[in-house]
Image (tube, rainbow, N blue to C red; front, side, top):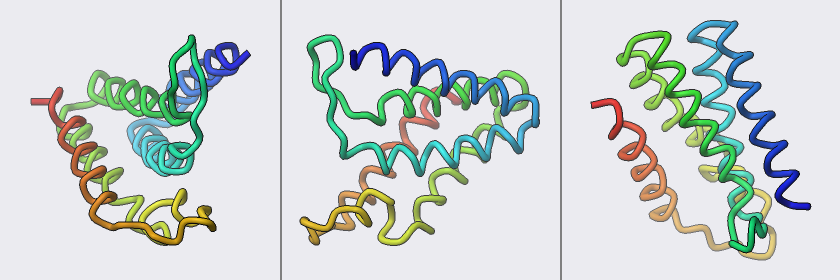
Length: 131
């Protein structure tokens, strides 16, 4: 059952990327920012997919990559780099650096170094394919 939900989730994320393309580069950049926040929200939920353990944010992370590829294909590489930097800083404006830490009531310890390294890895991996 999780597999069907996951495939529907991927279809919805891909459709959102194509719909955002109709709004131009601003729509795509806005979608990337929303997906960056949602990845932080869904990362704490673990699910079983095809016998493997995965997080619920995996489809959204693939959606970010798809949206960045669409942005680079229809617009220029500089616009995709700008979108990466914008989506890198958007979670900083959420309280405590990400929504998932706001909803954790049992674990009040939230190391900021982990969030910093997570965002740094996101920035490095996103800009890797654009060079």
